[in-house]
Image (tube, rainbow, N blue to C red; front, side, top):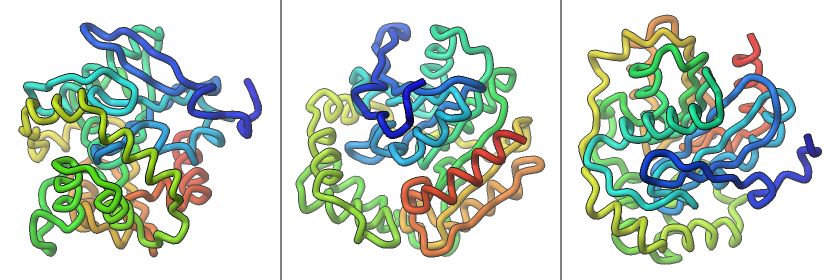
Amino acid sequence: MAATTSLTDESTSKYAQVGDFRLHYNEAGTGPAVVMLHGGGPGASGWSNFQRNIGPFSERFHTLLVDMPGFGKSDSVAVAEPRSQHTARAVRGLLDSLGIQQASFVGNSMGGAASINFAIDFPERIDKLVVMGSAGAGQSIFVPQPTEGIRVLNQVFDNPTAEGMRRLIQLMVYDASFLTEGLLQQRLQAALNPGHLEARRTSSSAQRNFATELGTIKAETLIVWGRDDRVVPMDTGLRLLAAVPGAQMHIFGQCGHWAQFEHADAFNRLVMDFLSR
């Protein structure tokens, strides 16, 4: 395997045909398989969410950053069912194509909901489950809905502009001082993909209600949250903690919706140790 310092989006970029569409993923490392699923904001992709994690993880794991259908470099797909269900099946198809029988999942936001969906529908295919700022746990009882982050996210989907994207990324994190113009432009250009925009407009907005199914999850589960998350408030993570058998939770202070990005070093140590147990 190449040294992790040489890993780039381009050098790790691969595609797989899954059913009727082509799925893009970044792949690095050997060992037990770990699938990382990004959030559902405009311009999101596996690389944009997990670029600070793939290097360290690839030293110990066969690491796959998957662009969910309709995001990143994957094909634009109009989805007629809850997106978490569609993504879970797509990832199962990817694992089948790669000959991977079982993988651990690390999912952020909407990717967390897809990871939960996978754990419920395909329990024999998942080892361990890690979710960060995950959707799928219901609404906060303390924060008015929709949250500030979700309101701005929807505005940027409807009208992708540099100003709107900057505001959205600032809402995603506790401290926006590290955000670069390069990251902003990367996300904005991806958000302007006309195929993805049209697919979102014609896709179902239905969400699967996991409330009665969380107790069936058998995978050992780690829940990670930012105390200052303005997209999916922390109390929804406590609902997951109460419902998933044997789950444990780690809360990062001075952290927003992107724990894996904002606190990358601590996150990498925490999650890799959990997956290695």
